[in-house]
Length: 274
Image 1 (spheres, one colour):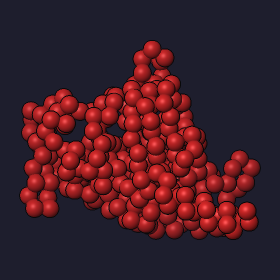
Image 2 (cartoon, helix red, strand yellow):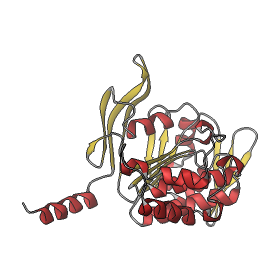
Image 3 (cartoon, helix red, strand yellow):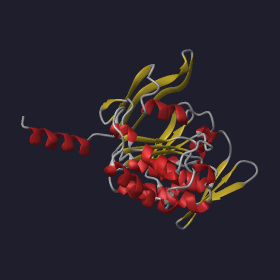
Image 4 (cartoon, one colour):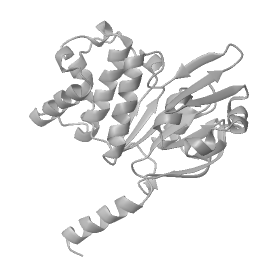
């Protein structure tokens, strides 16, 4: 088969093959203590998926499995039809608490780091890579901050820098672990609007978050996770009192006022809206 025909065939498979296929996944860190049990779900290309569950429910563990950093004990994890492995087509944004914000790097340095998965071990960034890093900073509104140290930025600005790093990588799949935790409201809206736009362009994103209201309003699908899959589907089907109670094991009230969604959580009546 000629190379052109091969490329066409691969492109055709890419438009029909699910980006993520997880089948009966059981895995963890200590052999007799699995964190995830019999997890099964499929993510189609272009989907914006919220991964919701309480602390310790296995959200970060699931992301490690999708990144190929935590092998299955049982079952399988396929990304683009292949067993999960470190892959430049997957961009990962970790929880902010895991990052050393005092490390002496500039905003531009961090954005440029997104190019290294594409370059390999022995190549240095060139002009095109630097232009891509600047483009990514423009997308998140921080190109004028490119020479500042990340330690000097606000929490919202820091999160935008790591979004720029992910954009510079030019991935097909974004994995974001609590991207709006502890940031201001404008940054929360910016992050979700950017993800919506990327998914409309054919990218795919999984977002671990506690922000039920924004997921209800903006996301295509929801994965309710508490060491196993409680439910997976569109928000209007998944966000029921019974399923949320099974997931969070506490009282959650979801209220809708037109296109506005309010979630009242716990005994203190903490309210979030998007």
